[in-house]
Length: 85
Image (tube, rainbow, N blue to C red; front, top):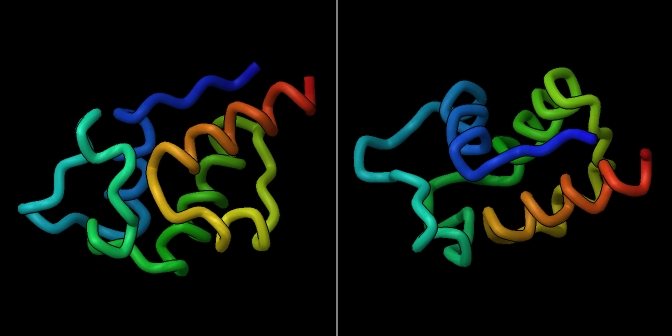
């Protein structure tokens, strides 16, 4: 089963969408909206594609565009990985 951590997510987001020097994903930012962190829906779709390539977890565009926080993204990846196993 694929396990993705907050650190992993931060790395993929940075690679896919770049990073603002002021934005650091920490446990405290798990429930902060991606838009408040500087990431838009396109960044999330690109991140989901990278997660699929690296971790083998396929997320639909509809699922990804419904996500608003890093915690929701991580939870979706975990749920999807369990369902696929």
